[in-house]
Length: 372
Image (cartoon, rainbow, N blue to C red; front, top):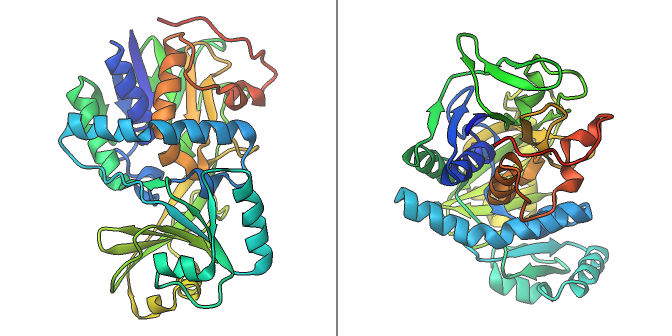
């Protein structure tokens, strides 16, 4: 079985790697360099709590499943690549600036035995840089983080080492179809043919031509800007509060992130950097003396209902892995498993019925047969 994957972010590379392990031949086509889109620009949070507060129940279940398989996933990548991906399970503090916010977090913690509430004094003992006057914090001791830039490099390495073919600077401009089934992925110079095709092109998914309107995944770009600070002893764990998150990494502190609908514009704005820095300083006043050492932007793949788009398309032999928005790194190992299973005609280990791409069309949601 030969599979053509469009996109070499963490989703495309994870799917490709799992398919190779299952005995398929895999070609990945990447418009730029592997993992240089949203995968590279993320903060690397394995964050069920931070991202999952208002999640759809199906998405929250999928997030918990993904977080649960991350430790073994990271170990396997490091063993196969000989590279570290910086996976750390060192917990997260969600700061409550006011009594009202503390009460909301307290209600949430009461429903989850893994979460606990800390007084302001207890939170400051964990993170001395926190400002005075907070109401307290919610503590999750098992949340994790990973160096996503190291992760994408390691994934590309293990994919190629396992026998995968990775073509960079190879932009797929068109999916060739007879109206019911896909028979090729066309770049400006080559038609790539396979037994199955996986569309994992992130925010650029909807730009690919050739598909009927009801088959085109309605993915839209959501611009996100982040900054990195350097200048002193960094916090030792991820912190959420004052509309920012702070993630320590290799002597720097990542601060994120904005979310704006600016089309495919990835230009950097002083306004975003200033707002992120101001909110970070409000949370930890000592950061005012730190230096801004990096400022970047990326496009996250959003969907109309805010849920991932995973599984078979209305077109035979075409599968989709997109719409992860902020959860691309968290979801990566689970997406690798479930989309691989769908392509092979097997039952996914986690239920992804709520993420079916065909929910946006008039097509039946009956499970198709194997293409293998």
